[in-house]
Each structure stands twice: as C-alpha cells, then as structure tokens.
Image 1 (cartoon, rainbow, N blue to C red):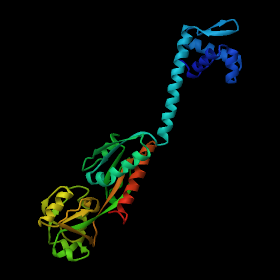
Image 2 (image 1 turned 60 degrees about the vertical axis):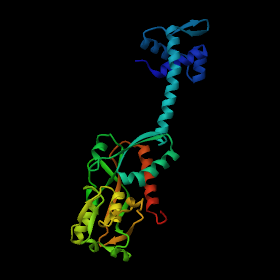
Image 3 (image 1 turned 135 degrees about the horizontal axis):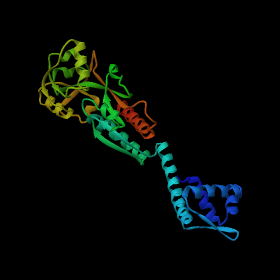
Length: 304
C-alpha cells in the first residue's frame, strides 16, 4: 500500500526539481528524502524519479503519482475542513420523529431557529409512531424523538430523556356553560359531564385518565374526536366538555371558553429522546438547545 506522506514528499521533490531543494524546503536532510523516495518506489514497484544533471525529473509513473498527490491533498484538506465543521456542529444531518401538536408548537420554531443559526445542518422531519418511536432511535433510523412520558417511564435501555416542558391541560367548555362562571375548576366538577375525547389511547390520554382516577371517577366519553381542533368544535356544538393541553389550544375556537383545572391538574411531560450512550453528535445537541428555547418561549407568561 502506498504511503500518503511519501507521495507528498515525491510531489515536493518534483515541484522543487531536486532532492536538495525539497529537503531544504521541508526541513529534512537530502539523504532522508532519498530514503523515503526509495521506499515509495519499492511500494510502487516502479521507478519514480530519474536524475538529470544536478536535479531529478519524474518518470511517467512519478508524474502520475504527483498529479494524484495534488488531488489527494485537496481532498484531504477538504475532508479536514468538513470534519471540523461537523465537529463544531455547523453541519450534519438530524433525523427527527415528532407527534402532531409538538410539531406545530415546538419543533417548527426550533428548526427555524436552527436554520438561521446553522444553515449547514439538515433536519429530516417525520411524524412518529403514536405508540412508541423509540425502536426507530435504537435502530438508528432516527436521531431524536419527541415523546410524552411520565416519571416512572424514563427508564429505557440505550435511551436518554431530556426534559423540554410540562404541558398542562385546561378544561374546554361551551360558551355559556354553568361551569364557565368559575375562574378555575376542580377535576371532580367534571365527573358528571359528558366528555369529548381529544386524544387517541396512548401516552397523551394517560395523564387525563390517571388524574381522573386519582379524583375518584372515570370520564364518560360520548365522542372520540382524535384531534384538538375537532374536539373544540364538538364542545362548541354543546356535545360535552373536554380537557386539552396548552399546546393543543393554539387555535382557539371562538365559541368555547377554557378554565384551569386543579386537584389534580393533568399534565403531559414532553421529552426529547436520544440514544445513550452514543458518539457525540453536535448537530443533535444544537437541535436540543433550540427545542429547549422554543419550549421556554412557549411556556413564558408573555406567550400569546
């Protein structure tokens, strides 16, 4: 196998026209240069230089290697530059899995911020498996997944969970509903109400069911809507009440009112899930930073 360093020495000799000049330019002795060229000729199995008076000139094989050395040098320099960019988190590719409301309220602004700061990072966005996106992380089909987890679900082999935000549920009532007269509600106030289901069975519905169980009742679902906008429309039509997380109320229906709910307050906790342990992925770390900032802004009191 040809040694890259010796090929670059050959190029230096050819460019300078002599072993002595190349040695002087590189800070070597002429004999050291001569020895390295001899080793390279042995590796190549062919003569690379021929003497011309006090200098040398490349043979056809020597010229071919010299030409390739210039290309190799450019490619190596480019590789070093690209590696430095990747190491610094200025380039890279991040495959993200997200669920719908997190995509609209959290992921979109985070990716927009990342593109402004580091336009060289490519982000692949796909809706995740609603039940469990973690297998895609483990199989390396994804680098980061947005998930809803309760504290007792944070133990998963090979996965690290980074807390982003606590998304609190509010009661959604039809305009003019008797309970709308209260500034806030106890969860038991809703025990005898017809309920509009806003979530499919899974991680986002579990906080609601767990809170109701703690309050001593099971909600009477009369409609399953499957998404928050549709749930609000059914509430507005007077078919029942609903519990919807803050992130799901970005589009507020004009014919409903919302009230905080307490004792207990249902909360869904959202995490960024990443592989752990894993090699450092600066682009992933940068995306997590922008997700955290998006979550902070989303939960700030001044957020509309």
